[in-house]
Length: 95
Length: 489
Image (cartoon, rainbow over all chains, first blue to last red; front, side, top):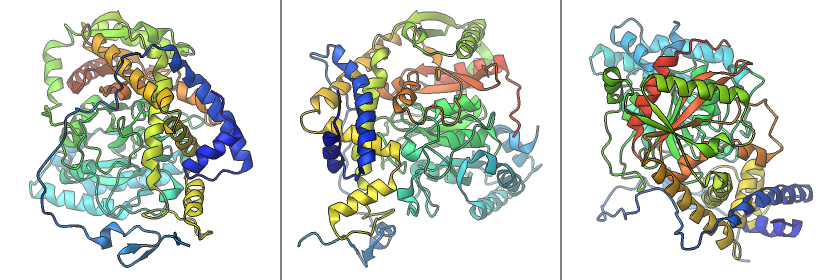
């Protein structure tokens, strides 16, 4: 499959990436190249084959709720680039 | 042999006989890193003070006869493993200032067993790459020939072990990232069965593919580290509730029975892969003969979907990556771009400035393959092909105990040779990707050298949770071929 510059723009928005014009062109070229190779998957008959999402044991891992001490916001927020006490700060979302 | 060349077992003996102290050993290694790592670039962070503190503590423990499996042994960690209080960058600028508030499970286990954490090693950014050229910090050079890559993504760990900067290291393997650099650097690399080792505290790349494993100077050391890091963990629900054997027992068996009665399968599809280097072929054929001399029966097997492995992998891994890496949004940790007051713009600028080109490429492929209208044709189909690949292996293991193959089609390539051609780089992963797709264990053992003196390893893969067979066969092979060449820095 070939990917156009417009499509790259759309995917980049979904992925929350910001590419300049030159990067978009290079990305379109490289993605097209990779996807053209990947298109060989279409040659296999996969009718009635179940998909595998992984190789883990496919059983549920359950346990009863347990009361445990929380590390607290001092620890969980320690790496936040911007915070106000126990809160993350992000740019204003409602305008 | 000099101190920095010794494996874990020999160092342990010297420590227990009080012939050396962990403090002196750690200092010798730190001095060696200081002297030579400028040319190699194996480490992102060297934790000198803390390492010496841990070494001092280990010496006290030894004096008090309070001795664990790894007491006083200096070990390096791929910088994708969270270490409490020590910067963990994942080779990315986006985590340049990230200091984990906890230790990953394998790190706690190493510490509990007395290991000295000497530093954090370089890698392709977020483990995406096969050459360690995609690190945002530095490239790592192959200690055997500094014009060549060490392989990747655990290239820093493999280079550090082969250069004698540590006794052993941990890496992670999503598509060959332990086995391939081990092969390129002439050290042993083991990717355990998916679920054998807890992934808690390993920064996620492809969650259904990632496994942590040892990179060591020999097979016995790999077993020793496997004994420490394996086991179910309540912090990782995909870690298997299955008994962990004493892996060092693999070698008792060897001394008694050699490898008689074992069958190795060679996939006929692997031999017709395009672009296999003649030196790799030569070393592989010699390895085959060595195993035969140990009593192993070699037979041809078939993995019919081999030709589709790279295509399926390079959809599935980027899909998982695009989802996993969404968390680096400039809010919870790491770098944030502050040039805008719009939230979406902040996300976009943060990611594009923070991530390198290969990471952005994989996020783009994954986002595309999971997007409305393309999901079924790409992610859905690749997951179905994954089932077919898994079935190939189940069938193959009905007629052999392990599968024998090269690790990579060529010895380590030159720095810069493949950097502008992502697809060519992806295609070099052909022999290692399947083990991750099928969740089975694989080991890379040094097997020889190319005409130009670059190391070449062989790979063995076994049934799920049968690392024992790999260790046993790997050890037998290692003992038979006895590679004596030293790596001079």
